[in-house]
Length: 164
Image 1 (cartoon, rainbow, N blue to C red):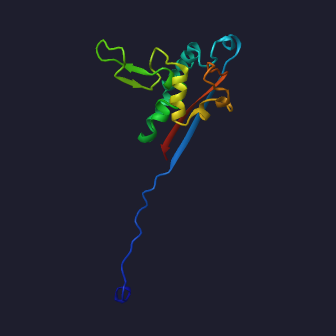
Image 2 (image 1 turned 180 degrees about the vertical axis):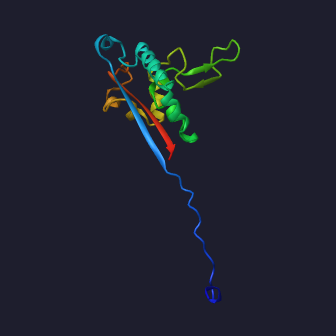
């Protein structure tokens, strides 16, 4: 009977291909205490950055971290593998061609050995619009060209985006 009606077209509801995701964010806040308060540059001092780097590397090798990060969506896996952390910018891996003094490639991966200048790292973080995420409120107000940046606090952010 329906087929005999003028203008009838058969429609079927197709399966919906939407995927639901679970997002887990981990914010790690670092605060200098005790002897660390005397470090020039505060959390930007190479000793503090090195300690933070070692701690974050120890997190990444945990079986639970690797499992959850391994199940994360490919397009956002960098947010759990590398995270959003000042260490990535302070300790980049540099590749050199031959005996050249200037690196042919710089990877902001936090796996380097020689820290870059704090101003350089902060400028790169600023270009990513991430200063507010990684540094305390009001930090931008304390920056000036004549002063070495310093802070007692620092944050790192990691995101795990997993299909349910």
